Image (cartoon, rainbow, N blue to C red; front, side):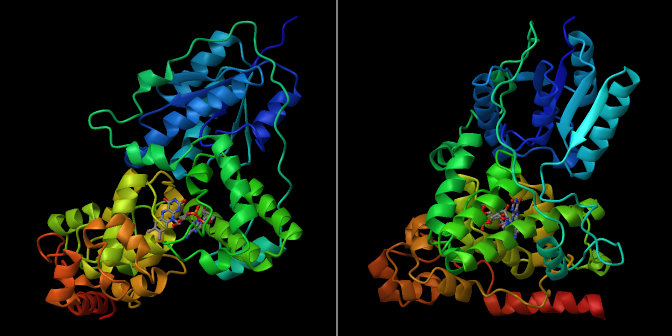
Length: 479
Ligand code: FAD
């Protein structure tokens, strides 16, 4: 008697290593049908943005290849997830579906929908952990409530539950005699064409599990030791740049955790290790917050911020989006984002603070722009960090702490190399002037070929008055 196949439903877990659902399905010895469903409606307002769709295309292509190398085939289908999966189960005689749990509020609802519809048709749905180090319901305070402050969360993560070792890759997968038909990836039109704005993304990234593994190995060998010192320097390659790979599940947080620990054991990277694990814990904390506060992407975590007097202004928003604010470090970050789908964390904080505080634009407008343009767009991390900068989040930076973009530039891009790379029109200015070009003498500007207001914008808002306006706006909340 032929064994009925198991559907393995891939989503943001596009890897074959350390994949508990895949490993469990392989262990049954039954034939497997890996499937990815493009469900355009899933996520509602938070459906995938443009840069993430570009990444998805390449990540799926890489995943198809990785599966084919171990004797399997990824079936691509498009439509309502529950309907498509139920149809596929019926067509193939599958009696079980295995998947990894996702933690976005809409994804959890979708999993329940799939479980109910398939359950009604006699198909068992099994969900496995894999996206996080720990299930967000397992790490709780002593009072068994969700954490709202990072430090005790981190302490509990570090000393409480063990982060188990990652699983290996399956050596082979049994396929059914007849593989079901699927869509051609190109027909999904995930890549931009008119215009094709993805040149910078292609130059910067190698989506897929192989690219993720390469990046992780290079990071722990070459950069982990200096990570604590270098992670705030956008002018250096000091961080891992693993975030898009983590967002698409091409590598698991557990693999990153263990790779870093093992590399530190071999070398002298204890300080770098501690800092890196802590950053992974911020990802975890963001997921924890979203899991327990599902409206985090849309509404302030601290409700008193609901009446904040924003000054919505499309021209200001547009200048920020295009990297034309006249503040070089902000503009460099926004242009890096537009070109590569990525922005260094320090610059994300500076650019977000500038939008929220100097320009008084609602944090949700910046969050939406990041969502569309980041290759690592992650609902939890994006929302939690925007709220952190806005001061409205859990354990957030106080609203009155307003980044000074010039000082931030001078501290974290001291030679101006990051600005020079992304804002070439002021590249010839010396380091001492590059973070505040409008203060340069006419001679210095002429020598560098800069004309403020013509070749590079004058500041869109004066720093001191922007800062004061932000503090005044904040004061209305308390009064
Ligand atoms: P590394 O420094 O190498 O850190 C390792 C990993 O730790 C990262 O890949 C990431 O998974 C995690 N991590 C690091 N810092 C944070 C953080 N502050 N919050 C959560 N996780 C963190 N990160 C996203 O993955 N997706 C987002 O949509 C996102 N939006 C952000 C929006 C704003 C306004 C800000 C200030 C930060 C945002 N971040 C987001 C967090 C952070 O900027 C990126 O995770 C980081 O820059 C990724 O670079 P890296 O992989 O080189 O990080």
